[in-house]
Image 1 (spheres, helix red, strand yellow):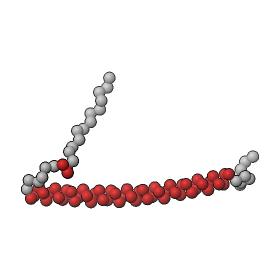
Image 2 (spheres, rainbow, N blue to C red; image 1 turned 60 degrees about the vertical axis):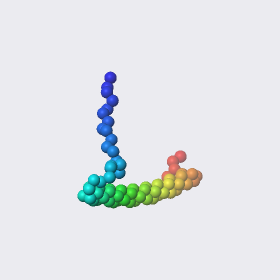
Image 3 (cartoon, rainbow, N blue to C red; image 1 turned 30 degrees about the vertical axis):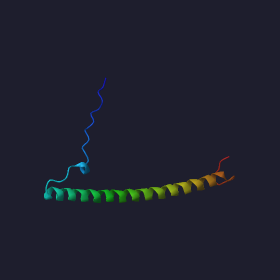
Length: 82
């Protein structure tokens, strides 16, 4: 019988840390938080762009499918084989 895969232990969130002990620690933590905030904003911007492109592609695909369905539903349309 195989042993279950080893799961790495989760690290605690950096937001749950105890207060900074010194001004230097506070400054380091502030820089990290600002960096993480900017990274998350960039990720959200990228995701919003991807979502917009996906909506556009979905709309175009739906319009093409509807046009093809209309074309196929017409009797005697070009390209039909009997």
